[in-house]
Length: 100
Image (tube, rainbow, N blue to C red; front, side):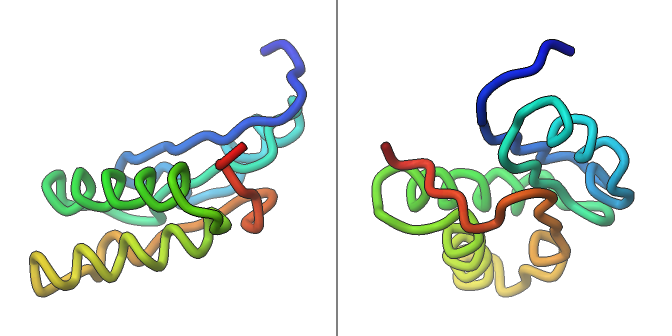
């Protein structure tokens, strides 16, 4: 992997952040933040989560961790349960802002 100057990885797959080694590969090669789930995640709740996450992260002036909290709340409102999407992990800078 070539080194880069910043960037954000959303690895929205089951157990994509159960361990930190994959995320650290991205961080060590110049990405700012890697985001994933520590356990299994429901496909529909994940789709709602990343839709709300990227809406908040790219159209408002919030950090990626604030966008994740917003997205989790949206999943909770719509599905009544957000346990799986709330079991996530940021590796690297959780205070990154995606909005230019």
